[in-house]
Amino acid sequence: MASIDRLSINQYTLRQWTLPELLQGCSSEDVPWVALWRDKVAETGLKETVKLLEGTGLRVSSLCRGGFFPAAGPEQESSNRAENRRAVDEAAALGTDTLVLVCGGVVGRDLDRSRRMVEEGIADLLPFATATGVKLGIEPLHPMFAADRSVIVSLRQANRIVEAFSHPHLGVVIDVYHVWWDPEVYAEVTRVAGHILGFHVNDWIVPLPDVLNGRGMMGDGVIEIERLRAAVERAGYGGPIEVEIFNEQLWRAPGIDALRLVKERFLRFV
Image 1 (tube, rainbow, N blue to C red):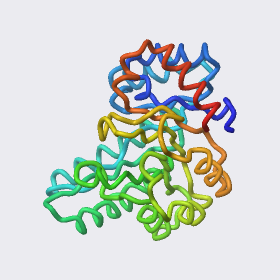
Image 2: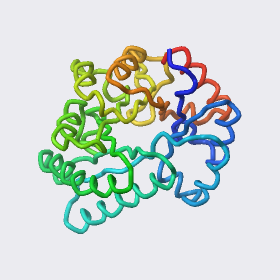
Image 3: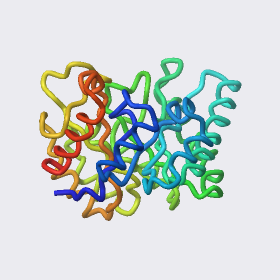
């Protein structure tokens, strides 16, 4: 089982809380890590977020999200690249070394070109991130998100990109919701040893109530969470484990009750 010192609460797991409430709640429950989202940071303000973090003892495991590289034309491509540089700067300001990349969906019904644009976008961003001290974590998403969120839909695809660049500031973020189904997942986890930058947990419940916002609490679904956690550890990852659950029912619960449930399930099922 994972220990409490590795628990990171993804900001969207407790979306009903403001940032100050999240930080206060995690501090009171002895949760050592938080994972932040750019839109939520923007609501509070970057400088104010940095100020709020000071003195809490909380560390930021990652910032989500960069990416969305495929573009319909040169103007959008330029805008995307500028936005990704801002994301890198924000990650550095928040004290995390990991920017999670959600790579972007299909543009112009051209899947192959969209995937090439992901690699081109990473090639453009990687030197800037390296100079800033931030690592880029490619998060492959479940194939059902290929159209609108990520054309990188398997750990094998992500690994090919990582191997092509062979750069210490590029790796993968593994979310069990997106990879649990893959018959090659354990071989691919071994393949990416040394380049795992994050590990996210939740569960796949049956029936799935919603593609995006229907993730389950650990222990309520079919994912072999402990087995996957053990695999990423054998591959060299011993960092924070983010609980990332998009779930309408969880968001309707009082924040402190939701946080305590997350802690309990994390210690039992991760």
